[in-house]
Image (cartoon, rainbow, N blue to C red; front, top):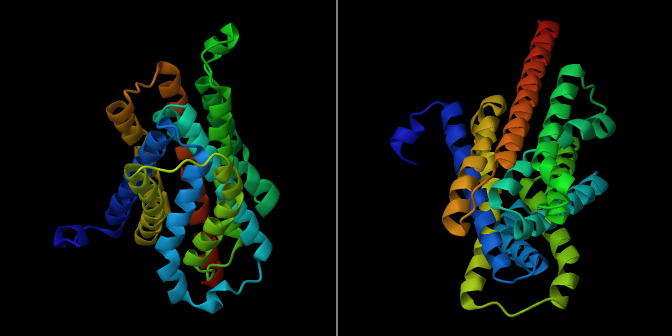
Length: 308
């Protein structure tokens, strides 16, 4: 790494890693959307994504060794893998039906779903401030549904919209499941399980609609797989380098990248409903992240007091 980068504070380094992951994931969305607009089924894209990603992580799985696969939580791993695979399929379908910026904005509802799921799965106590922020965030989803178009019965791609929400819900389930796993569970093994689950779910439908890709499409498919794994590793690097409360908000740069790349590659211009709804969702998610950081700091002080 350049000396100038290494001279930055850990938080700033983490922020730059997060910005890199946001750009990489948005570029991944561009590749998926280009393949879908070229007539390729989202099942075939998902199968190739999982297959190429599996090839990319096999060296790390091999290095982890057989002991890394030993776990006392097979059910949690299974739910996480299935949720992640379902989220990927929903996201790819949404990208085939909706503008890139819209899918990205709806994806920011993940913290809202995670807040609700944490109550029932992790037994967390959510107080009125976070409940209010969560409800406000879902109001942003309603705004993106374009109430004026709903009243006229036009202008809404409901299937794509629901698929994008399914993507956010699936990611939230996967995140909550990760929180239930011990810290020593190996990251490469978790990605391995995700790839296997994705292949098993996608292979049947993909073979039904399979068409032989051109050499150019094979390159794009390989890019989807490798870039997806790269984005995940960049996020891990970001959180390991900096404080989560400082680093996490930089992920919202995705919406800016999505608007720019959506315009450059697909001539997409977000309308007022998309921009307004995205602003509400991002604001509520940032507030939830801020509250979680405050509560985390308070708990650490309480523990320090007990130890002292």
